[in-house]
Structure formats: structure tokens, C-alpha cells
Amino acid sequence: MQIHSKCLVVVADGENALLFKESRRGGPLAERPSWIADLKPQPVTASPKGRVFERFGPGSHTVETTPPRDRAETRFLQALAARVDRLITREGFDDLIMIAPPRALGVLRDALSVQSSRRLTASEAALRCHETPAALRMVIRRLRSAT
Image (tube, rainbow, N blue to C red; front, side):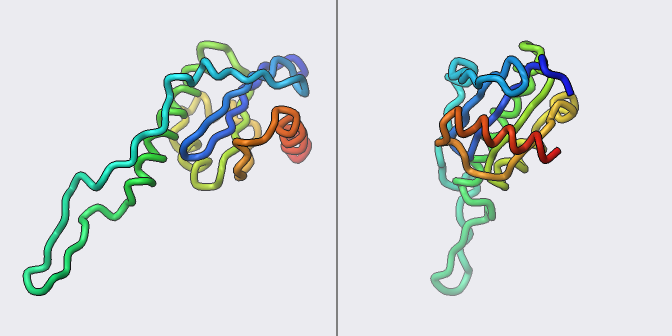
């Protein structure tokens, strides 16, 4: 167990994200809003594929099966994962911890590079974007003790 390793903590959902830097294991979490200041949720737009109308009768349906809100969340989470990849390289983080709801966590994991995935030491499938840094420290402590 390394005590002096730098850890990047990502707390996200489909629209919001918080990034924290933990300079030493078990130390205070320093929020870094400047790292993602330009990363905004994607606007929800209608299906670009249009509609299909039935030849007989009033029926119509869209061609796209993925709801626009899900597509917007996926784009936001993929952009966040790309930002996390760059931060791990630029800032020299040793560990990565991710906390997000189940679907968002899956998208983030899939979008991470192999290098960043190797640094993933713990994760939790939960919505915690509105937790305080002190509460998040307790969650991180519990996650680390479970591994």
C-alpha cells in the first residue's frame, strides 16, 4: 500500500461531474473545478433520423431507438472520460477512483483508455454528486477497505 500516491477521484452522473485530487492516501480531497470548467452537459436534441410513416393508417414512429437524453448523457460521459485520460497523463496520477450511477459508471469505464483503466483502484455504482468532500472521504475509505 502506497501512502504518498496521488489519486484522481471522479464523481459523476449523466449531466454533472466533480473532480477531486487526493495528494496522499486518506488525505483531504481538493476539488478541481477548473479541470472541467469547459465540459458542459450536451443539449438534448431530437432524433436526427426523422420519422417513418406507415403506408396505411395514422401510425408513425422514429427510426432511432436510443432516446435523445441517453445520447446526450453518453456524449457527456465520453467527453469526461477523455478529460480524465488527459489529466492522468498530465498530472501524473497513480490511482483513479470513480463514483457514478450504474449506467454512467459503465459508460465511463468503457470510454477510458487502457492506461487509465489500469489505474482504476476502486469504483462505486451510486449517485453521489451532491455529497460533501468529507462524506466522499468516508466513501473512499470504505471502498479502499473493501479491496
